[in-house]
Length: 145
Image 1: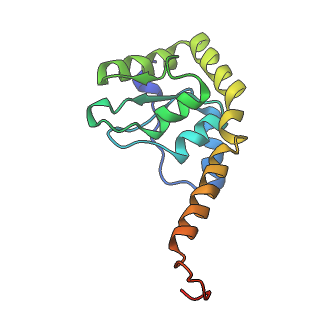
Image 2: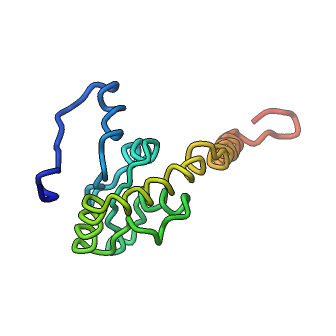
């Protein structure tokens, strides 16, 4: 069947059923103009490519595109500049098992950059330390605010 015959839209799932969903997916599509986040991470955990349409016209980077940058795959296959490229990339991954396997392998080989990276956590800790320090009232020489 053609690619359209292989598109599956699923109803709301339990967390258990959702967790197994990406194992059988060849490709996931990030909706636009809204982006993915947790869903993209879930797809990457399973090694499933996610086709992303860049949000250059809104001048706001999408999270999924940023995740591809962290993976070192921003120029690889899956970030499209316009709708036509988005469709072409999705179809190419859906119908070409070799390309799909190549991209999936790269995601699997690099996903530790997303899931085992503590740099973001350290930055968040530093932010909270600064925010708490700024929120505390200044103390006078007597020790009173």
